Image 1 (tube, rainbow, N blue to C red):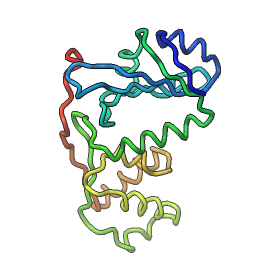
Image 2 (cartoon, rainbow, N blue to C red):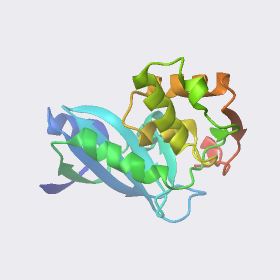
Image 3 (cartoon, rainbow, N blue to C red):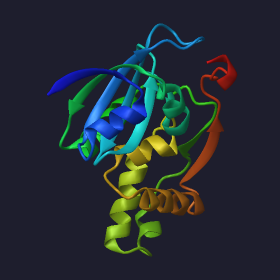
Image 4 (cartoon, rainbow, N blue to C red):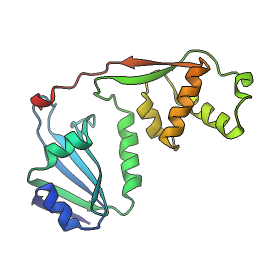
Length: 186
């Protein structure tokens, strides 16, 4: 069910009550390329995530910054979404494949091979996790992107990355991607 409302976010959330939905709106931000798309993912009347992306899909802002920009009254398209977590995960995975306009990112890169001998000290389950994480490291994906892509707890991914670092199989570099405009410019 798609409906349109011209309301501020707080009032719209009150109307939705305990529903789960995606709220979408178009907005213009200075220094952004073209019109932007604001999305708010709501479950049981609570905000799970707020995202603002450029017209090409590149993310500009997330949660608090995005929520602040989206508070004012505006035209919202509302779609009820019973599986909101799955939808949010899919949207984030799609965004992972785009270059992120973050000021910095922590990007793991393979340094040495992961040998069977170095894996013997770990339980079978841990060996599988280490191999999964290493398989997705390509020197371009950030740690946050890797967490989104794997169907594992973020803490397990971080632990695996730390183990791979201690084994000197990978190293983590800090990369400056595309610089974001200052918040005052948006």
